[in-house]
Length: 369
Image 1 (spheres, rainbow, N blue to C red):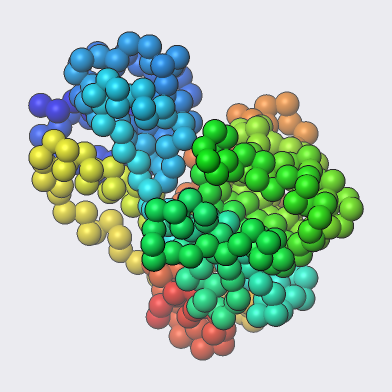
Image 2 (image 1 turned 180 degrees about the vertical axis):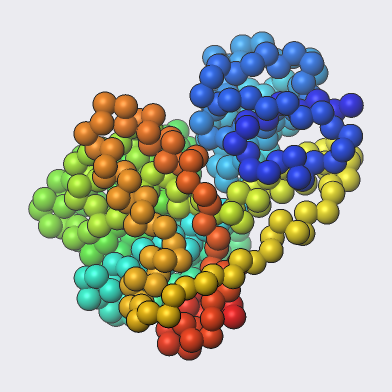
């Protein structure tokens, strides 16, 4: 029987696994248990796997999966050299991230009285999340450019915007992995030089902390070369910069990709790759993706207030601001990510026709009757 050790927070993982496996769970806040006898290890970004954290790899271990869209917390080359297959759940949260971006843009435009159609958005990174953001922006007739030189090198069908043109955009939104040593490093991509020589109405980071130099960003906010920021990821996570939280239009605890469907997708992708590797059959899971009907009181919602009923973005914002002066804020930051029920993505929410008829934006977001 295949023996699997998995992070207890990988969402509803058991529902996606065939009966002929033995699943054991571990608490990621405690030291990693012994892997002796296990064929599979499934983790999340909070568990760092490399030659230091796992000096001895058991002969039984053949497969490592992470329930995240990126794998920069795993030394893939190290494990591949020991004949261990490493996979991720890339793309699982792309739609959730794109909803975070378009939702925050709508809230920002309403609050700041900005006409989004008159602004241009520069998308840094054209992977699954960046591509989903591009689709959302197109759906709302918002002009955008996409910047991803590494993808242009490997994908003949994709043409990246130039650096000069992307830095002329009014808004920047980041959707890249964090790397320091590649041909196209992303660490502190938005640095003091770019921030002092250009101006932006809004900067959004929903990719990885460290992609933006936070001290340079704070200086740009003080100098008004950047007017507003929306920050979901932090350079010293799970610790975070109190000053940046206070100055942000929206600050959240790394939850842009958190939704019921994104979490299900991550578990599904891991299960599909695991079953393909070990030649197993995945069980039926369609019942997990049922839509949810929302019953809202018949009061006069503004679009701003209605969006906040559909997406808990500002609830997270209020929570992280409450943590700023707490000595244990790094621990509580993690609890914000794990303790709140996951929101449903817009296409899995059903509203009464009156709301959809009043606000065309809801249909563009994908809500149904």
